[in-house]
View 1 (tube, helix red, strand yellow):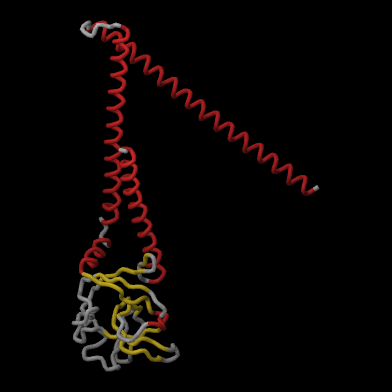
View 2 (cartoon, one colour):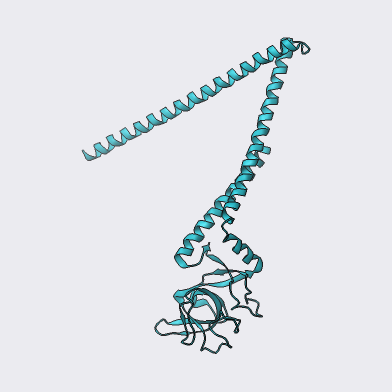
Length: 276
């Protein structure tokens, strides 16, 4: 039971490391490809400006973390908060050429790009918005469907703090080192425990053998001599067992190699026979 628990804990910690590294690699690859890191179709970002500060339930404060998911752009409705690559704006504004999250105010054609999202931040007074003033169509981020990255599905300050932590240089080393240290500590304790158990079993075996041989436990010299001889026998027994195990492993390896050679020989003969 104890061994099963040890294996379970080690497996959980090891799985955590694998998942963490897998997510990190996936996020690096997707960020390089699309400009934002994604895992299983979801992207995680945090708000850096006050352009979306407002009173609506999906308005965004500075420092909040957001979760976005890419949907078919044709299904996105007016009023949805979306994330996009800010490449085009109305003539009176200037594009940032950055990843931006704003609200869809209108959906209508723009030049030869077809239908586009006309977006604006909730905070009309923000210097990070496309312009100050209430949205009237003259100030907007114009987002072709190809620049759409995803729609807001969740947001919170706690998530934002976590995302910012993952950007720190210490995050990955620490989150990998701690589970590895726990695994090493747990394995060390387990090895120590097994060693103590084996030592007690060996001592019990020696004591039983001395009783069977009629050795007087009060005769220290005789007892120590007998104990030394018996320990030597145990050590020799272990060496013989290890030698047998090594010989068995060598034999099995040679047998497997011979079988592989025979398979290769038969395969060549069959291939040769097929050509003839």
